[in-house]
Amino acid sequence: MRGIRGSTGIIFVPAFATSVMVGRWGCFLSGLEDQTHGTPTTLPWGHDFGDGVLRHPVQIYESLVMGGFLALALYFIGRRSPFFLRNGFYLMVLVYAGQRFLWEFLKPYQTLLGPFNLFHFLCAGLMIYSAVMISKSRAA
Image (cartoon, helix red, strand yellow):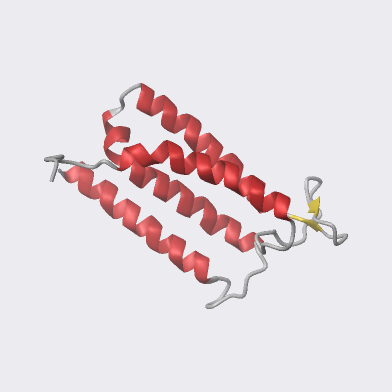
C-alpha cells in the first residue's frame, strides 16, 4: 500500500535481540517454575535453582549469544552494510534458531525422535527458512 519494495525486517532485529537478551534473564530468575532450566551439570558455573542440583544456566547462555548478536547487528547497521541491511532479519532468525537448537540438548524436555524434542524441529525449520531466504537474496 505504501509502495515499499524490498525487505523491511531489519527494523525488528535490534528489538528482537534485545527482548530475548533481557527476557531470558526473567526466565533465569523465575527458577524451576517456568520449565526453562537446564539439565544437571558439574561445570563450575552450574546454578542451583533451590533444589540442590547444579544445572546449566541455559537462559544465560542464550542471553549472551543474543547480546553478542545485537552488538554485531548494531555495528553492521551503523556501517550500513548492504548485505546485513538486506539479510539482517534472516541472519537474526538463523542465529536465534541455531543457538536455541544447541541449548535444547541441555534442557530436560521430552524427546520426539532420537535425541530431538519439538523445539529442535521448529528451530531446524527456522534455520532452513533463513538459509533459503539468504540464498534467494544473493541470487537477486
